Image 1 (spheres, rainbow, N blue to C red):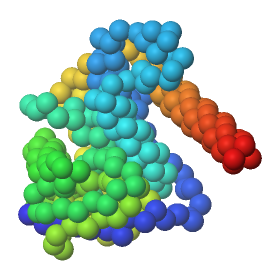
Image 2: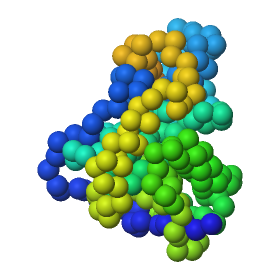
Image 3: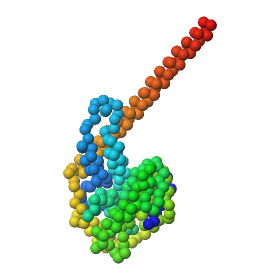
Amino acid sequence: MAITILGAGVPSRDSEPAPTVAQVSPIAPGRFAGQSVVEELLRQHGDRPQRSRLARTLGASPLDANELSWLRAAQAEMVVGDILGRLPEGYTVYHSLPIRNTAFWVDHLVVGPGGIFSINSKTHWDRDLTGSLRSIPIGEHAMPYLRDARFESAQITALLAAAMPASTVVQPVIVLVNPHKILLARKPDIVTVIDSPRLRRWLVGRPQVFNAEQQAALIALVDDPATWRAAGQPLAPAHLHARFTALEQQVAAARTRRTTFTVLAAAAAATVLALATSLLIVTAVEYLAAG
């Protein structure tokens, strides 16, 4: 297994003007980037008791550590979804497609002249990422991102084989949202690992592999709901997105409160220390004067 490394990971700016946006997929109408993750986050959060008034006042987060990781994962998918939404005309983008016969979903699927790409969004902001041929360590844990990307790609290739030109495969891509640096072991050729600021330009720069007829046949198969596992959708996408946005705002407000209390506590401690120091100085001066 080999891994493609694109970019040093330093965020760059794409100076090209935004073109006509990519076509929105008709499958699962209105399904947004990160929706599967948002559904899971809200499912988990729904089982948590509400914070007490004191906890809210002190800035306790409404999410536990596991829920925060789901929130960040959803945010990463939305960042990548925004980037994919700026692909030029001729690209079709799908989000949160549940892969049949598996418990997996693909974060984003892109069909364009340069091929078909299964894209996984990963969020590890401001971290150096180093890795081997099998995994990418995050902190003390080796994350099987590369293995999972290959598995998803193989599954989707099999699902779309009827419309896929001979020897063509779905290309697995891992997008790291604004990492500080990407350092992987060997020059790659199977799984592409790229930082988010370079994703759009890289996709548009792929050499053409599909003609218009092949691309249309692929899109028709991807659009067919029978190609995918039925996705549970207990709430309308707009309602899900609104609840997620409200949760983001609560997390941000709690963080602001914690920061405020930290600053006030530090200021109070500094004041007490200054007063104590002043008293000591006055006492010392009076002692010296009395002597």
